[in-house]
Image (cartoon, rainbow, N blue to C red; front, side):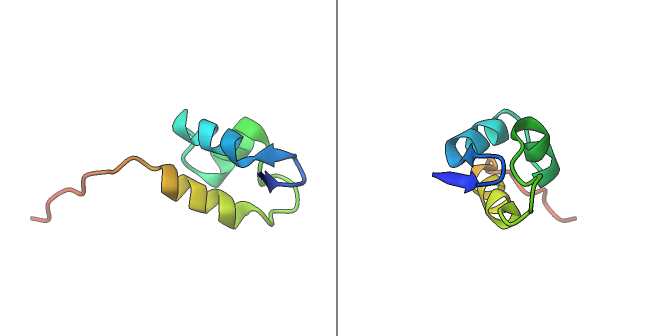
Length: 62
């Protein structure tokens, strides 16, 4: 399914670039073009970044 219509970027491609290290909307845009047109898809890109983020261990509070 297309997430970014302007750049014709599919969800699977966005997930791939996130897994490869693009962990911000700007980084995803740099890698595949998603979110660099009208910006309507940026909320969905942010949701995908959150969904693909590795389970980070929160540091203990002192």
